[in-house]
Length: 249
Image: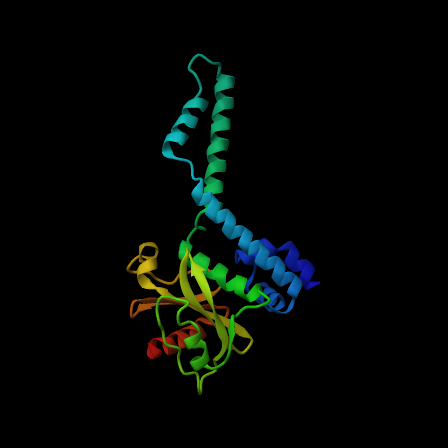
């Protein structure tokens, strides 16, 4: 039954456009259903491919100008024909705006934050979410040496409610980074670490956490690295894990 519901609302679920309780139900189902997790991963990959293609083939200002000149009504034509061309122009411009909105950054959401959320969802949907499986930070941290161009510290989790599941390499706009997976109760939390200089142009120097994501997220810069902590846990829990990382760094 849940499989059928998720199939009907898969796009809305991945875009974070379903009610919170339904989102949590789907999250739990995706983690346990191989078929639905595979469908979700394939859809995420398709959305990201469309997003990249849309940016690659954005019409130039000169092209738009030529198209507008072609559809501009000639003065000698009748009122009815001018009205037809005006409607056609409005439809073309509206379609272009809607396409740009879909292929570009979603309203109110920074592109980088949106991609971080997509990476988090894709990992949860994967049948192999981590490349190094270990609860020991002294095993996970050395695994990244030689795979990414920087080093980072993992926090000590003793006497905390968090547990380390493992890690994997990841890429954000062709920038290599580390992706750690943590558990807290029934929640899964992703921690991403990238070099700050590779993302500064997109994030800006005064980047703040987004307000319109289907997950809670906290991000900060420390020691030349950019950290992202994201998951469906409460904002307070996300903040506690972030503080552990800040203390370790």
